[in-house]
Image 1: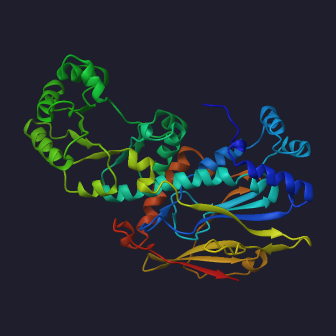
Image 2: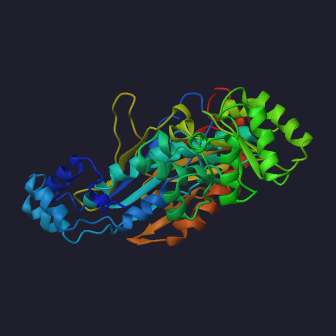
Length: 440
């Protein structure tokens, strides 16, 4: 892995702001920043939070070594005094927010970061770059999983995006409901299921398709999956069963009318006695293509381009805004932007979801000062959506690693099932539940 500091995965103005505020004395003011999106991608009914675990991973390494500090000094990004301040920097604030796999809507306070202005402002770009992309992939993955019904979806998008984005996408896809990935680094880092056998070039490098199948089965066993559309699918299926016998694990189709071909291949496999051989289809699938294949005899799907690009929505348009800060007199004061079309709601937030007959009916965002929020009592049936990730610099490790990813995978299915059924519709529409904001 490339050795780098996540503290430099930022925009330059975060350091220039730090420099200026250290000089004028406001860098040490206590602040609360909030991550939210003003709107979902056009026509989407919900979003899925993903990436928080990656933020915590990066936060553990969020400091600058001598080479990083020299870079900032040589470029005159910050003053020597700020370089000194950064030498032993570690985030000492607190972070809470929506857990991975949770549903989110416009103005949901997905993440709240509390600390000094100096330390909080440095996290903006890193937090947004992770949450915006990972949540976009998880949201697309969730729609695809719904469209696929009970058939597993696998990530095959590594070659359709940046090499590091591919690793992040594989993780986010599993949070969004996918079962595994073709990306080996993602499988190694996060303990994910790895999948894959052979490409068309493997068939082409051999003198015949039969020799290619014999080679693959000799190497991987009869339970492998053979790619059958390099030449003629019907002939390939016949050859595959002749070589492996009826115990052949699976075949993959990567071109053509997938529904029609899957039906023909299923009938052919059954006629040849390979009744347990599974059928996997790939080839530029998205949630709409998956929905069209619901009646086809397909056992699993491999999804690439549309997964890693958020199926047309590669970002969630999340922003990171200051909502409360310490005043000159030492008291905390809610603050807000009033810009046209970009106004924000002042104050730190509480977030709840209310239910009727076990189905979510509304998102409730309560905003105000810490003192006012402390006196707020939610309705008994409201579900608290905020969990603690970091407490005064101490990271809660339950939200990191493989187990956290699989817990998020399971939680997403549960949270989606609690939404009205229209959430799973692929038709364009408004968010499936409203967000109701109350300022105390």
